[in-house]
Every structure is written in structure tokens, then in C-alpha cells.
Length: 123
Image (tube, rainbow, N blue to C red; front, side):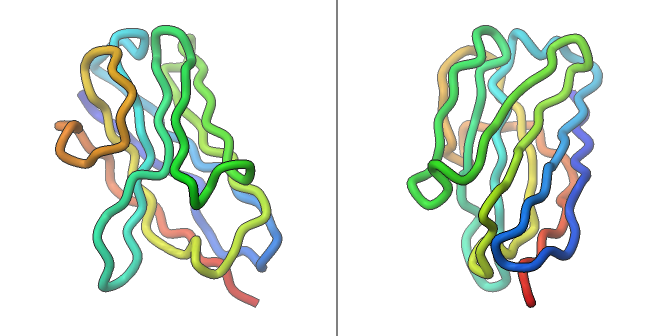
């Protein structure tokens, strides 16, 4: 299982970014894919996850109604659309994969990780 995260950058407060997580070496419909983030000096926290099988989703309260996770099984890719970005969303964002169908954004449930992509929200 290999994951490649991309799409980070610098954006002003209130702006938007779309992150992509491209997977290889596995079939997306047998996995749950999640996004995590880690700010300097903070623990890595779960942001959102999606079932590759049926598209069911989970969001952390801090991003609910602002972020949207989606998938394209044909491309083996998961996206995170981030709107109404705030300075506190600044972090390195990671995607991760867990085999199976249980929706979770608990770090220890994920065994495969991509490299991070930096998101900076600042004016």
C-alpha cells in the first residue's frame, strides 16, 4: 500500500484548498481512507475518513460543515475539499489507509501512511 498526498499550500483565511491522496498497490473499495493533521507541537489528530466501499464518511467536529471528503474509486484517489479555512487549520496533512470497513479517525487504527502536505492559513 502506497499513498501520495498533494495539494497543500498557502491560503488566506476564508479561502479553500483541495487535497488529494492517490493510492497504489491496493484496491480502494476494500479500505477506509482518512485524513489526519499535525500542527507544530501538537498531537496528530483525525480530520475525516471515508469508506472506499460505500462512501460513508466521518468528520471531526472542528471541520464539520467546512471540509468534505470524497473518493474516486476509478482513480484510487481520495480528496479533501477544505473551505472557510482558518489559521487554526494550519498543519501538515497526512492521508492514511486501514483495511476493512470500520469508519474511524483514530490514529492507531491505520497502518499505512502517505507523506504529509503542508497547509498554511495566513494573511
